[in-house]
Image (cartoon, rainbow, N blue to C red):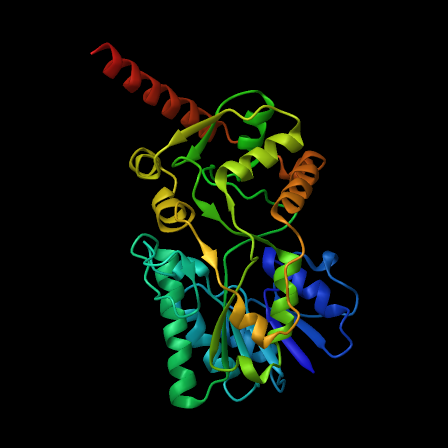
Amino acid sequence: MKALFIGGTGTISMAITRQLASNPDWELYLLNRGTRAQELPENVKTITADIGDEAAAAKALNGMSFDCVCDFIGFVPAQLERDYRLFAGKTKQFMYISSASAYQKPLANYLITESTPLANPHWEYSRNKIACEDFLMRMYRENGFPVTIIRPSHTYDERNVPLGAHGDNGSWQVIKRIMEGKPVIIHGDGTTLWTVTHNTDFAKAFIGLMGNVHAIGEAFHITSDESVTWNQIYAIIADELGCELKPYYVPSDFLHAVGKYDFEGGLIGDKANTVVFDNSKVKRAVPGFTCTIRADQGLRRCVRHMLVTPALQKEDPEFDAFTDKVIAAMENAKKAILEG
């Protein structure tokens, strides 16, 4: 069978690319700009083109058809409308990477299934994903376009340490603060539950849905069954670093109110909510699927990799100063109330 990935080298898609390359049942093509071609398995075929240039993409794909096409980099409906024009009648399955952040906020029930309503007033990213899903499902209902929707939650690899509040340069500055013995911001009181999924686990279920007759016209989330608190996440990281964790708890809505960072979407619309996923639907479609990398195992791997990879150690003095400023303001407020 023949598959085409639009993208194929990101956090989620690279793990799928690597696993699928070793599967004798699939012949894999990637359509992208070729920026990470040197990291690909030898038997993966590349089509170098910018999918944003529809005419150029159509020319590069001329005469080709696929058993499965997946778009990993579609974020707004116009991009999926383009995909429909490019692939209608040319694929037996079109898989779209949406987002579990699209589920309603705040949740009416802590346990999330695929029938949980989609509604996120706090995050434009999530609302755009919902709109993309709506378009694709309409094309399925009206025109028989063979759609499968995939909703990842917080999926990670060795290049990023899952954290709550951080700056634009990623997690290194928070890791550095822990190593320097400084307090780090944890949103809320750190007790909400969160689900992190290693990309190699995600890939197993995703590949099981490829070419799967039970996946057409359906939506699936793919996550670990394990939920951990943010306190546990930060404690695991500090323990791997061999450092004392000094948590400083700040309400998520306060961070949103005073920060230039997207704390409304990233926290209030996502990480500040307790999320527990029911994965029974994907397990019915992909018998035997289970995540085997525990949160503590995956987090420790991430920390170790970051410590030996200078390219990932991106300093963020602006976020460092922001953290100190928030903590000082909170401490001054406490002092003023106590002395008042």
